[in-house]
Every structure is written in structure tokens, then in C-alpha cells.
Length: 158
Length: 158
Image (cartoon, rainbow over all chains, first blue to last red; front, top):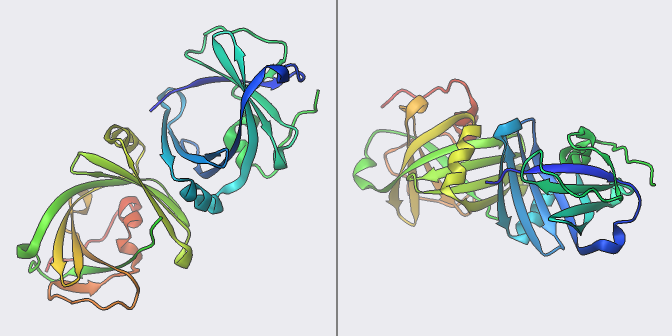
């Protein structure tokens, strides 16, 4: 079980692109999603798959992640709730941290979101120019919202 | 992924007890349960745990089972929907088949259900005297019902 603190930002331009490395193609979908629990499947580079359970709210959140066979994930995809999210995740080194930049495709084309994982809420980090408005905690950018909302607003490109 | 055909019976007496072997203590609970999908966690003998996803209805049902760490299962138990089912499962050899006999405890004390797994719906099997009324397909005896119904009717003891 892991607990995580992530801060999330929109992008202010393409300045991150020259620094990006290790792109991975991700397909992910929910098997269930409720107020205090969710089950997500993620397929990485069409080659491996993980099942992630999240439980609880606020401080008592838990996250449980298991490798599952790719074949199972592909069958489970037929039971996806809402849409299957397709995105390419780029990594950008940023001091002691790594910024993950998700470039969405398909129904969410045009949306780009950056995330930085911290060990506690007050941890400082370098703030590169390409990070735009912070959207941490904004429900419109939750993975569940992006998968389950019939229509998703995407920001104007910069 | 596995597909299964199970026939389920109440018990007509205790004639099965002298033939029972390999008793296992099972604790199981649901993390979600819907019309066409469910996620169950089962702890066996307080020592090992499995996560089972079931999807679909009728002929297109799928079942996916994964070993998970016992510690995860014990944490997930705090997120159980409804009740945690506790039962002892006994096995009874029956010709080419094995009959599983679940003796429920706690809130479901008094309920005993036998199951036999077949490879197709028309497969014949020996019908020992201790099998009582068939309840295959009876929603009252579905695992989900037993876990989620506030009150569960249990049959009169024989």
C-alpha cells in the first residue's frame, strides 16, 4: 500500500518538450469508481498491465497496485466504465523531482497535464516556466472525471 | 480468466460430515458489487489472500483472480461493503467431482450450502442423500446477497 501527494498543473507552453524523456503510452480505464473507492486498469506500451485499487478519503486513503496479465487487461477493457483514456506520459527531470507530463489523445485531445509527486504537502520544488495554473484538487482534472464525464472541458492551447 | 458452472444445494442432514476433509476457514468481502461487475477479497486460513474480479452477465461472464498480500487484504477489509462473510469450507469427494460444503458463521450462522462445479450445464453427477433442495440461481444464496443484504433468511435446520 502506498500513499501519495501529487500536485497538478496545466502547461504554459511547450518549453518542457526538449527536456522530456522516457515517453510511455498509457491506456487506462475504470472498472468501478465511487466516492470512497475505485478500481483502475492501466496498460503500458501495449505490453504490461496493472490493476490499482484506491480506497478511503482524505488522510485515510489507501492505494494497492498489482501486476496483471496483459490478456486479462484487454478483456477487462470491454467492461470499462465511461471512456478508455489514452495518453502519452513524458518525464522531465526537475531538481530532486521528476515531472510527469500527460499528453491526452482521442476524446481528450488538447489536454496536457503535469504532475509532480511530493513526500509531504509542504515540500518545496523547483517551478519551471512551463508549468501553468495549478489544478491540484480541481475535480475536472481527476482521472475519474476524465474517464467518466460525458464531456470534458479542455483548456485553450497556449 | 476462467468461466464456471456451479450448481448449489441446501443440505438434507449431516450425512456429509463423516466424508468431509480439508476444511478451510474463509473470510470474504466485497469492495464493489453491481449488476455486471464485482470485486471480492477472500482470506484463507488467515494466511493467504486473493482478489477476484467478475464481469459481465450470462454467457459473457469473466472471472479474474489474483493473489494479493495478506496485509493488503486485511487493510482492504476496513472498506468492505456490507458484512464480512465467515465460513468454513469442507470438501467431500463425490465420484469424479468434489462437493464444497460451506458452513457459515457469525450473522449467517445456521446456513449451510453445498456447491458442485461442472464443466457444462448438462453434465451429470452422483447425487448423494445429503444434498437437499437445489438453489442454483436463487438470488438469496448468491455470495453478493449474503454479504450485502441487511438480513438474510437462513433455512430451518434439518
